[in-house]
Image (cartoon, rainbow, N blue to C red):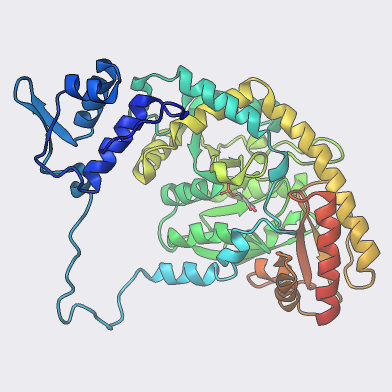
Length: 487
Ligand SMILES: Cc1ncc(COP(=O)(O)O)c(C=O)c1O
């Protein structure tokens, strides 16, 4: 029943353990069978008695054997595998119902608002996905090293339920970074670590909105964010943008007493303009007068290719009505799912308890690794590298498009961000263009998807940050074939 190979890489105890376990699972050793003693087994197999003892001990702790001193060791009647198999539910007659089932009405609204985000688009990493950083340039080896260090350092007591606001050293690292780089005024106590800005917005909406409250949203604007607002029962008020950012005067005319405004002042999504100082002041002035909240989504402020970014809205707000929202999805990796909110001091408790009610807290290890990554200076270094890389990739996109798509796509370099707007000829259909591009293995979003009411010239939102210059050149060639078919 047991054959040991003394030339194999696997240790003798491992071979013995595996073959006895297999014999039990396949029924060659039946439940109730009495095992030979370790003394007999070790002399028959020519192994030390210690090996036999440790294997018996292991099989006993896994629940395959039981025994008492003096009365021998037996295969258990109730093998552990049997505890894992649930009996199949029997489907009684009439248990299938075809009647329409009631679900929350906003669930339907959310499905409608997200219909453009099919999995094939959302989960793709093909050119020219607009929401992705350079997955190929992330320092994975370094991250693995830090992860190993963190696992070595953490103790069993660290793995109990953690701080719902976030791992303290990470909050400290984030608040230092924000003060130095974004002009955000905050302490680590004001940081709430969340699972990306999406969860941050969901949390802010739960804490700050009542069902039916009006919320100004940029039009065009970030589609998935709208879903979080709808989830809280908000009424979305589209407010157009121009070269200076959100048109505050139109918000005032449409919903002067709205409860909240959601803005991307450092880099408007998708058009990319920076909200000017007068607009920022007008927005803050309105929020102070009517007691509205401003959610500042600072998702992309790090990637500026000429001159420093404007400091955050939060930093110039003296009345503490701005909730600042940041994410590591663009600066590091979306799959990390780590973002954060900076909340005013008087709201800390509300936010941290509401955050606990959501999912208690983010996983510990990733937070600890990220804290190390920032405090050892790797984050700042990575951002510097990515800024240079993205600038090159942007140049590669502009030059490939001027070579291959002259007269079809109009594109201009931009001083910030991770995507460019490729304007199509007036009268063309950007959704059809994006669909046709998909047939040619190019993933992109048409600009019209981002709009609620506004009518914009047709365009494609072309991400460049995640793709090498070669991928960009090949992708543009495929895109050119697609657009020559449709336009
Ligand atoms: C405007 C905007 N905010 C935030 C995010 C990031 O979201 P998350 O942090 O949930 O990954 C994105 C991603 O595309 C975005 O476009």
